[in-house]
Image 1 (cartoon, each protein chain N blue to C red):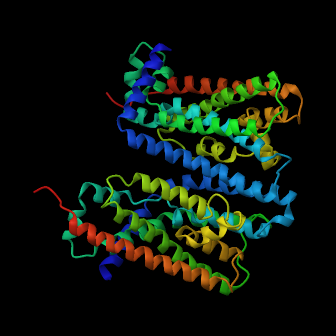
Image 2: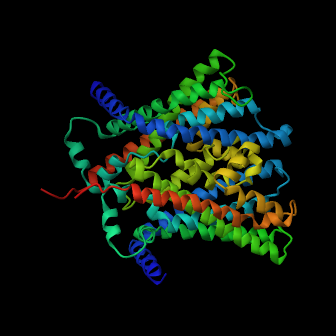
Length: 257
Length: 267
């Protein structure tokens, strides 16, 4: 852990060397996700409600997804570029070192600019709470924390799958973007809004609905309390992801001498 | 003119080589389109009376938007041009017996056409088989289709003229990234990418329509779907022509001036 924090500070300092370009890319990223939420604001301005949700509730919904993806993207950046690590045979070097493989890959690269989006998520969350999106109880606060943390966990799993695929194909598969970039766009509404098939896929295949749609039902007093614990079940998704990683490592044949 | 035409053809051929990448990109295009339509379907089911355009028109708009994405996307910069201005290799271009600004234009238009033509056809074909009101439907009249084609050409020219202006401004800025970031965000917001312009609140909508961004995807997509009627089309397309002329001449003058004061070092 200490080693990890050390790497984090290195990446942060290297990003801060070019200060203006650091802040510019922060700004660019926040503008993109702000636009995503503005589309919700405009539609709610016209229609008032969707599926019984109000604007503050949707703000909370998007804040949870935004915080989850941004945290995962910040720390799993090394997985995003894993195709390059493999094709340039850097993975051989990683295998020689006496530290866990995955840990080293994660330390290779990080994306500190993502903290800007976490900040945006915090602002949206505070606004939503101030506007009375939820009637609070301690259990609900716990659920909210679980949603964000387990959400980051599920996204981490998706990034891991994306990286594992390159063990077999050597190139990232663009179709996986559907689950990497897609939720940052479409997580602005609870997934139930998109209809049953989408909800089923996101509950049982890639369990993003377990960190967003179902616990939200509990937060908004629309479902039973045990929905609030479903984010923990979403973490089961990490098991097949981990197995795939092991399979990939075993399958790995070096590219060079 | 002939030399720009052959340069245009060359870039087009080069762009058409990346077939596998285009195929891979298409799967995501289908999902994005489907998710958008599912979303608006939910709004339609609850508030059909408050829709500024019909569900069928909206579906056509969304599928066409996915198909044409690379044709009008603001983030589709020509990084080679930007680099050449920043690093000064633009000097080589000046030695050639061609006008640099026309060359940039030919390159931008060709690359957009190449990228879009690869992605467009499968999306359009599949979308037209999706049952009403969620699929792609042809415009009501041949006249509307003809206007749509013309407006699409104008759209590409508006987007490329805007880009050329940004490249021209790069002569004066140390780092064009800020301008590019803001342009992309403004085009998303005011161009009808995040929600179609008719869905924007009053005031903002009228403003957006007058900006250059409102003369981009907004015009052909809405003519195609019937959201801009035949009677309204001439004035909207007139505005497109106005922006092309304004942006092009501003960029052209800036490039002229920028090149005159540029000092390129090296021997």
